[in-house]
Image 1 (cartoon, rainbow, N blue to C red):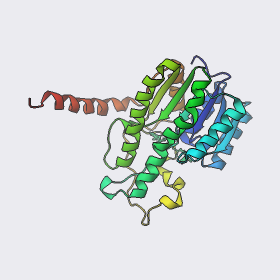
Image 2: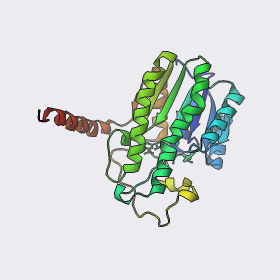
Image 3: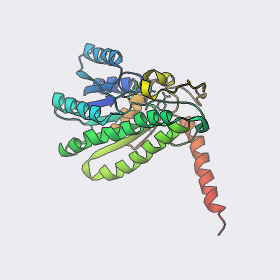
Image 4: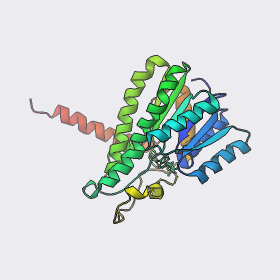
Length: 268
Ligand SMILES: NC(=O)c1ccc[n+]([C@@H]2O[C@H](COP(=O)([O-])OP(=O)(O)OC[C@H]3O[C@@H](n4cnc5c(N)ncnc54)[C@H](O)[C@@H]3O)[C@@H](O)[C@H]2O)c1
């Protein structure tokens, strides 16, 4: 896609952090934006900010864990703007704690948002994005935690590895249709991700609250606006991987070296 001007972008998790910065960056680039989130006050704030700068934006309360809710979002987006050119499956939550202590509700909540949220986005939007036969792009927010495992982050790692695998395959599958795919893999970004529990639904809360503290993030914490600029460039340049932190290179290299060793040292 050569420009976002006059195009339409949809951002889940658009009320805060990276999603908010994506919505604002798309609007600055001339796109009309649909902001989707559970947080209505946050969305009103984002939409207000975009409109105050002369942009066009719409807020749609959406729970990405619920297919019907994401289908209703697609209805509203296509109903309001007729087309969707950029879909950002970005809503996500983080949860800290060893896998040995993980509860079924922990798995349901985190996979429900981080993995099923992305799948629901595809189910609801992709058929119409294909049918409109215009250049388009899908951005799935994973994490460096989708490329390298971190102790104490196992459920999140599982969800984000799945999003990376899904995105890598999707990029191949959609190549013939002129729909690009990017997978966003940041390390630390200054957002409200550490306060993810604020959106955990009552029926998925644990009886006893977890005592696990967020693990210390490696590397710098980038402002979400800087990450959004990188995503914008990846959309315009049709780049699959958006790896925001140089600090990611060493852990990635070590992972591949371990795999290489496993092959080379294999007994015949
Ligand atoms: N901040 C980081 O350091 C970091 C690093 C790597 C990846 N990420 C990923 O970036 C994405 C955005 O997170 P962020 O850092 O901006 O955090 P954030 O908490 O600031 O924003 C996340 C947004 O998702 C929304 N959300 C949560 N559950 C939802 C649901 N069921 N339906 C709809 N919306 C829901 C929240 O209301 C919130 O507005 C996530 O996928 C996260 O995993 C963040």
